[in-house]
Image (cartoon, rainbow, N blue to C red; front, top):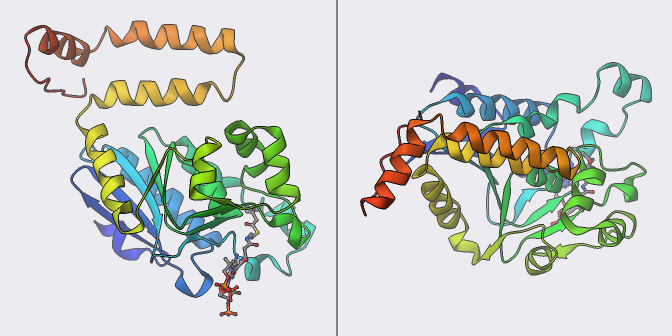
Length: 262
Ligand code: CAA
């Protein structure tokens, strides 16, 4: 794929319906700078459009770092004027607009912007050595890629305050207990787990998967009554798809469904 060969801060691979984006900035412990986030969002959008890709995985290169934050060297001398006029980080949250499910496979440190990238994914799975934190206040700033908004929805106000104000870091199991992380696996099995999750998703109707993801994420945005109405309409519209007929008739005929994403 033409794009994949041109990226400088990430690696993109497609295998068995899973599109994997690996953050590769080892000298900065995979911290994300402007180029890295632009490349991540670009690659995610390209994978989102490929019909052979059913789920995305995002991870960091190596066994110890998912991403150690946004790049502090890039930000150190930035002025308010520059940040405001170039709308620093504005487009970075484009990752959260992807239609297909994104699995964050968190291998080691996910700090600051790294934790925020993971939270833009739909499911976070973590290796045993993962560490989650939002240490931005130590640097005289605050989380800038959604940390103050997404973390509270994942772990609740008191814990989010503790993590952001007191730089409390969560181990993989603590993050799982607080709802931020879905599964914790042995470090050397992390990618196998992510791929098997992607393969399970790939076996489903991509239409149903996209609808479910969209409705779940809708709950972040709207009041319950509106979310329920939204879900109801999406549920009704599922009956317009061939995959609904296939799925239900396959069940009744005791055979495996063969979904066509139509
Ligand atoms: N940005 C740029 N460079 C970074 C970096 C970052 N976020 N994190 C680490 N590095 C660099 C270090 O500067 C160091 O570079 P040199 O070799 O040139 O000196 C190299 O990576 C190795 O780092 P350490 O020596 O610190 O490695 P360690 O193993 O002792 O510690 C760590 C690992 C605990 C992750 C530690 O590096 C650390 O605390 N990093 C900063 C974490 C942080 O504050 N992240 C938040 C950033 S701000 C942000 O993300 C804003 C936002 O909301 C979007």
